[in-house]
Image 1: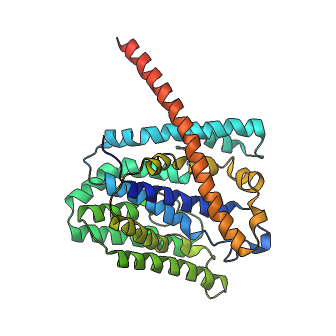
Image 2 (image 1 turned 135 degrees about the horizontal axis):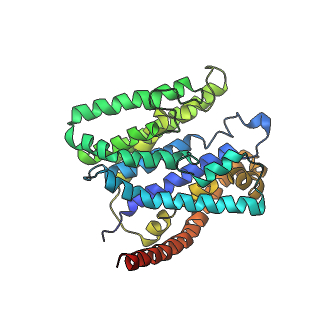
Image 3 (image 1 turned 180 degrees about the vertical axis):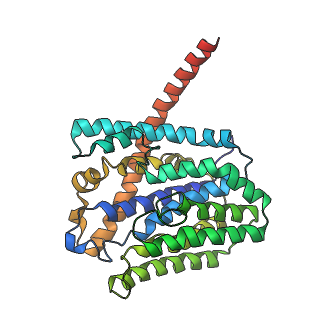
Length: 345
């Protein structure tokens, strides 16, 4: 079995840290008059950066493979089961520990989390994987020029139009920023980098990253001070975080390949931090009651430091929880497989 390159496993861990930090900003019990401040929105740009990085890893390794819908289904089957497991466990816990008052449809979504888009990222990611037979065929057959044109078209309609309209509804041609449309560009960009062995020197990669970050934080200040009428968080989605993500990805491509059992071990379970803390039945309880992150609102240094530390601890703890899940899954799977073979005989 080929060892996983720990460079990319580090990117996987970082991507999830970014996403958890974003949720720290989103769901904290901050005072009402401070929610729309630059400080409270400090981690917000990094959520979409994390999403783009996670998808780029997939694009880099999957887009060059021959695949069909049967193989695509095999890729997402285990993720589907894991999503069901965490969603059902949290649903049971919500009855036992009473996380809050919810509508009936919230429980329906918890029972069928993938179909009913309980986790937008999981549902969209699964749809993306199911589209890989078509996407991979395009990557393989089309030349450099046509791929660049396709990526450009997707960037305009999936990463520019939605955040300009910015009314929270999926009325852009490829959906809003919480849809599979937002995943197409990072997937194809990573596929393009892999296919043509694109080399971006470390200096340029750092420059791209810094440019993306500066543009995002500049937009927060500009929008906050009324120069434009868009919401303060408008440019934390779409093109600007994608620029940052591409820069970070290229930085890691410049690093020498290496193998770390610890990094790979942690990376294998980081998705659990999303499935646990972003569950609609649990997230507000987690951030506002269990952690009570609002107490870290002031001073600014404490807000930033605790946001980073909480993200690190959350990802590590949830990765450890996922190891228990993997043991249970492995034993149940072997048991089912054994019984199925007995029945076949």
